[in-house]
Length: 164
Ligand code: HEC
Image 1 (tube, helix red, strand yellow):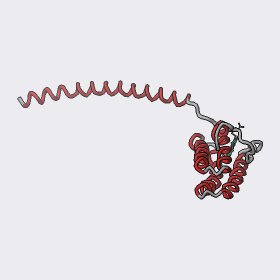
Image 2 (cartoon, helix red, strand yellow; image 1 turned 90 degrees about the horizontal axis):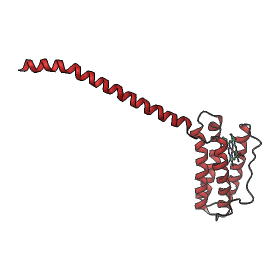
Image 3 (tube, protein in one colour; image 1 turned 60 degrees about the vertical axis):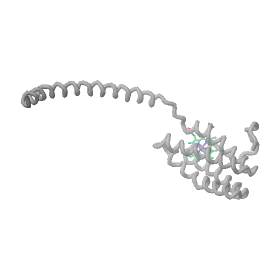
Image 4 (cartoon, helix red, strand yellow; image 1 turned 180 degrees about the vertical axis):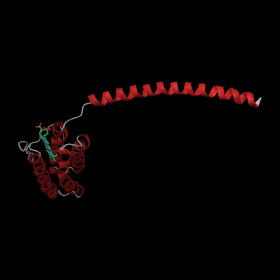
């Protein structure tokens, strides 16, 4: 009886292995198809360029940060600072191997000084560090040969529908 079952087992084993192989073969093909379709999605996904990030994140939050700080609205100022920081971080993560991703670090000391001024509710420190921040925007533009994009401390608030 023992021999018979050993014999049956030795006959059945190669069969079950063959079926197993076939199954894992079609599983691999399934997985490959999924990987290919995800790769296609990634390739066609929209990645905002540095110019778009500047226009839609950095520029508006730079302006809003100024008016929030001028009005000593520190909670709003901190929010705007974080949004602005988010724009710079996007350049680092989305454009890793481009010159802008390396150059963007030059703005961090000014951003840190503004964070401190907000935390300490220090209007004068806020003002002077905002000027440093704005100068650094331009230093980076010059470094990357976009010197014609000149940023200044804003005078009028173009976001008239928001209370600062
Ligand atoms: C990495 C260095 C860097 C820093 C720091 C930087 N920028 Fe820029 N900025 C660029 C580059 C590069 C471009 C041009 C990108 C392009 O057109 O592809 C640009 C373009 C711009 C533009 C032009 C967008 C347009 O379409 O007219 C504005 C506005 C701008 N930046 C605002 C700012 C402000 C405000 C700051 C500071 C708070 C700042 N940038 C800091 C690199 C930088």
